[in-house]
Length: 115
Length: 117
Picture (cartoon, rainbow over the protein chains, first blue to last red):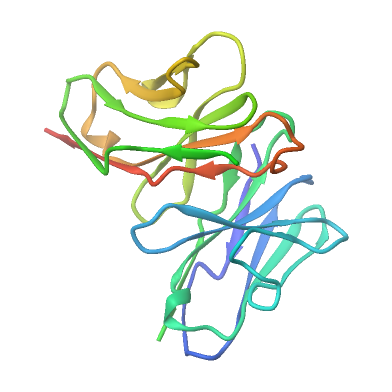
């Protein structure tokens, strides 16, 4: 199973600033995803990070707010731009072990608090 | 579009008793179904999955789940609960037909399990 490392694990940010979260996988993976888990809530898919092309965003999420990079098959970044307190969440990077049938593997998450 | 419902916010059970955490789903095609567990301040861990074949699937930590196509359900079960099973459990679904929504996995709202000693 893939091992996923996320940085930072947590941060406290000021309103109006931006923060970039890094996701590193210990093996090459085809599919990478970014999820958001707001306090006490379930996971909501932000986008699919596509290697070598623009990310595919879900309804309610836009590239200007959540720009994503995926320069290779083991690394991705998610930026949360112009943050507000409503962006306080856990952001989770995940990968699919087998694109055809496989389960997701998750990083430990990045807990952001916006003041 | 696919969706998942977990009708119970919380399930309470005494240690040693059987537990059930309910999940129903909706997909346009055939479902791939998953259960994940989240312990406090941790990421999600995979428990088990149904792809095809036997309707009863077994997973980690003694958990099992039964796929019921007619009832569109995938309830999580364990014959004898442990205090250490107390955590947040998520049911998730993916449409087996890639063309419908791609590979994305949709999660239920989660059910918090409390196992009392």
